[in-house]
Length: 627
Image (cartoon, rainbow, N blue to C red; front, side, top):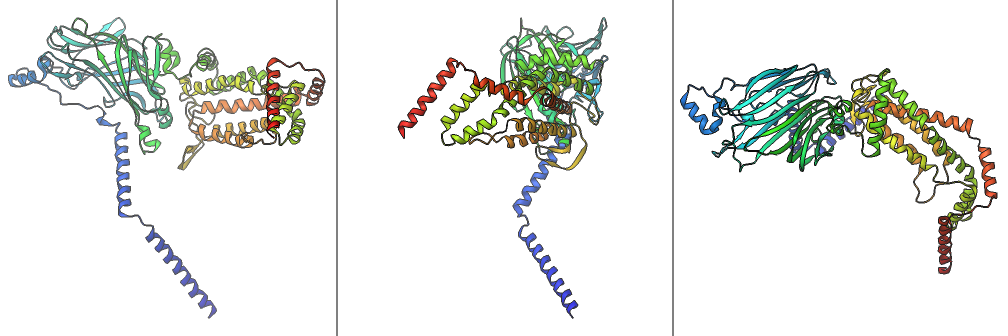
């Protein structure tokens, strides 16, 4: 009977628990409004996914082009009423959606009869992270190049809706493509492309002939260039961080849009515009600077709920420049660059294009340009890229070792003085002014400068920040493997997570973990050397000691593995150098003896120290009077 009673009680208990669970689900079920909101959110995400996956096909808006049969007088008359003099171009055999291909060893371009602009730009020698050819423009869906102009018969026309007639020829080894938007056989607007062997730079010209009576002088002629960045890297968010607009203006000044969005920014006398997609860039250059240029940058990848893996495009760029007529005609000599964001290549054109590579401002950029770039180029010329990073790191740390020695020596002196400083703090724990006076007096007698430990660290900041800019910008590291990292320009992966951790990601990178461990050990050594009793209002050094490696772990999990490799090796070498300094070079007993000897010598104070002492004494006296 007891067993049956137990079974019955168990059944009743389970039933109650089940009932409570059902009741809780009932109470917490979403309201109709919440269901509708969730449905709307899912629809929005699906819409974004579809839009992003298709590279936003509506990015390039096209109106219906007019094509006429020259024998059809009615159609020709209708075309003239809409296109005016340019109806002639719509009656030619070239008035159809056809493409002319020009290519060399490194670059392949397709130019559309309609609009006369580049509808495909393929870089032959590169692949994306998933082994797909690198397109800067693909199928004409992510780029547009258009001249909007008025005519003397009060029409507003767009070249992107009109048909050009192609003609291919040779200029020595160069391939020349002439695209002419004709009013007659001898009157036209021409886009001229000239492609040289093994070159990413394409000579380009916009000129008109015999159109003085066609262009409306009183109407602004605008050149509009748009491009949507196609994703090329493993991490879309990381690539997006280095995707932005760069431009040169007023002679040799340069600027960029940065990571955020840009709304109708405007500059004068613009000589080139670059739409940078981290490791690949599209640039329009002109020998006749645009009088003004306005820029727009929209952050597509950053304004979506899509997962990083689903993002297909990064940012959307737009530039608008007014063109000036000279003698009633257009005549601009330009260039197109479609190629890698490689410092060596861009610097070789002597057009200030190397500014597109983010090497850092001021002294940081100088260090990269004249030290790290040539030095790493030398090492990587005969060493694998990963080994080159390790060797460069070792040499940099050896060069900086005297700075490390001075820093550690200062810390050792402070450690020797710690008992006396503690005694002063205890003696004057209720008098901060007196405590400060005696501490400074002790430092003066011992010949110790408490700031000398900070100065070496400050001296290393330019090197640290220069390398922080160097590794994410080093094109040479792209898709170069080392140990478990398959791409030193992107994050390494030792494990994929089934979920995403905010600020960390959906994967685990090993190099940042090793770098974090190394920096933690380093901070334990340095912090332990100088650790004193926590002073009120002062930062908690133990907290900083734990926080810094944690920040390194999170921040660098999505960064270039080459950078994490550098910091890991750098901290490892620094730890080794400090152990040698501590156990072999520095003798704390000798330091203590020397400090005691210095304390016995009369110390002549400088004017600044004397003045500070007087001020502190006056403040102490004033404090005594108030009491």
